[in-house]
Length: 412
Image (cartoon, rainbow, N blue to C red; front, side):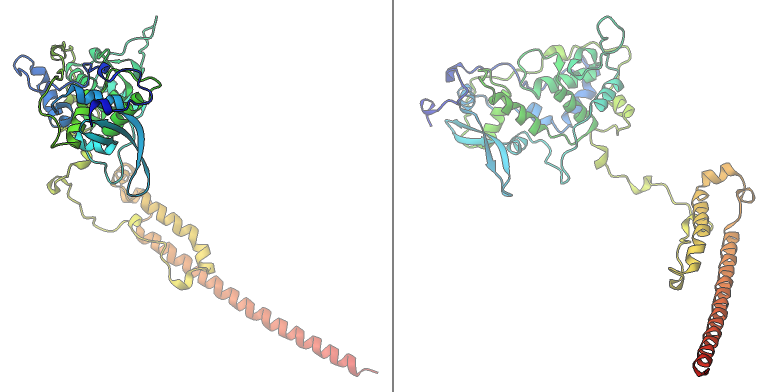
């Protein structure tokens, strides 16, 4: 398809040649002089091993004409998946052909982690993000005319962070976004991304980027400045691997040198220290995926005898169920079970003292239960005898009544 045959999207008010390639969506700077910047070596290694490593370093051949065609024709659309569900997408046309972009396709092109079987983790709450920033000793700016920290997530500045965290936030802001303006302040979604990378959450990076790109395409009047320049090129190269151009006519900016020359704070917090404060493993992998070796498991200590809490005192013979014995013995057995559960903990037993001071033993409880059972059986037997006496009296009364009726019938 030739460029002259391309049809502009309905909200495009500029010529195709007026599309601008601003300096956004930078390339990562992970290889540098470790002697000059020793305080950033751990942070760089952390990013190299993270789930966004490919996304921040992928360097496709940039073609200005191809990007202008994409941005000139891109429109909101939807496709139907195999289950019949509508999936949000972006339709576009280029000289390579017409295509569709989805969050799933972007996830594959940028090699983000696949969707887990039970879905991605929920977005971190504001409280979790503030706790995260507090743990890194973020220097909150005070509210106007006060000394109270202004803990708003829309005012997070990387200059107020320790150098290692500043370095990671610089890569999130510059490499994972389509921002063209100030790169000193992180948006809430970028704080969520940094939190997820460091903590090891299953964050849906592809959908976050796709939704932001789609919102820029849906504006009433589209901005000629193209966002996510490098990611769009990476997707087109993924979609057209054999016909994608190999001659570059542009280049991608890298994370600025200034990001490496950040000042170290007096109480510098490293990534290892931050993860320790958040009770996380020191490696970049998620704690949920780490396998605990069997040698690290504590050995089980066998008990000398079963405790009352481990016995099922509620099991009774079938003949007891629904009977008077069952009803009358419930309270006593419940107390025996609760007593056993309460004293099954060795720490509690140590606090309460020796077995003689803790109350009756299990044998005493069993004796009391048996004694109660015998008394209830005696009561049932007594009731049965009483029932027999009442039945005999009833028969005698019936006989007397019959005799009286017979005499009344034969009297003159």
